[in-house]
Image 1 (cartoon, rainbow, N blue to C red):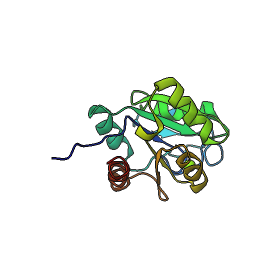
Image 2 (image 1 turned 45 degrees about the horizontal axis):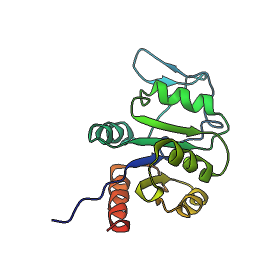
Image 3 (image 1 turned 30 degrees about the vertical axis):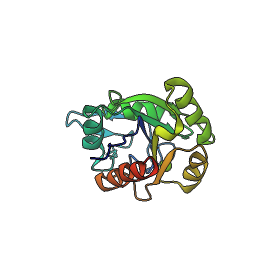
Image 4 (image 1 turned 90 degrees about the vertical axis):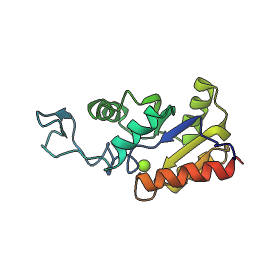
Length: 164
Ligand SMILES: [Mg+2]
């Protein structure tokens, strides 16, 4: 049987990849978790994520994958707060959240984790980020409509093909 090649880290963008909005534009801080366990912004707008995301993160974490976040949001504190309120902090070992070219974010992942670029898998809804990070040798998936279990499977398959 062929050896299963698995990424040593899986990295996700945030806006329009894990949740369906720009955290610096479409929602109003402060954010709060209500008694119903859901997260709302200052205008009592329910803050959503893509449906498959919490189950996906839980499964990947349980399966032993190292996970990271790369976001170029203009409001890093709000992005960190939402990850905390969604109870996702326990899943992400590495978080690089600040404006700029995502090559910088991945150079940080590489230097902090020691993981080679070819062992990384990255999902992002924006082509410009895919184009940049692809140059490093990272396997990149354009998640045009955000993350779903199907897009994750596509990414893991593409990683296998790139590494066999
Ligand atoms: Mg995005």
